[in-house]
Length: 156
View 1 (spheres, rainbow, N blue to C red):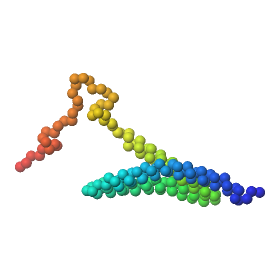
View 2: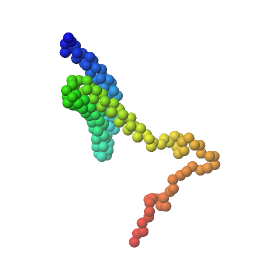
View 3: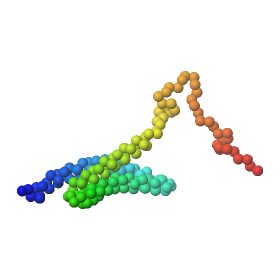
View 4: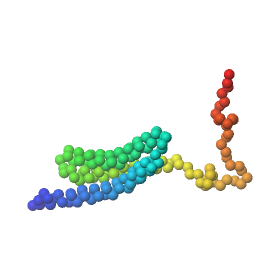
């Protein structure tokens, strides 16, 4: 008959493998967070406290996402294993890996959404990919009726 230590050995290997993969997937995210925090610290505005506050809050939200989602996945795995009466090691590590993969998916979708409506202006031309017909003037924005722009109000 196998001892409990021998039956737990494959589960330990699985847990270690899952945690190593989780750590490898979290390292680039932590690097990006570190770079963003360092950049925000080096480029702090001396007069615009609102922008500084927004940068700090966005970094806090990113840190919460990067650390919170894998932890929530691990908690869900542990809770599920406990409720089902199983050993919690493998489900906890699987939940952490699932949470890390979810963070990557959210990041990829966010980057895709950020670049979905992006327009790139190469060399000042407004029509990228379509050359301008020779002899036609460039399109310009209409100028306001007077230097202040907008509608002029009548003074009494």
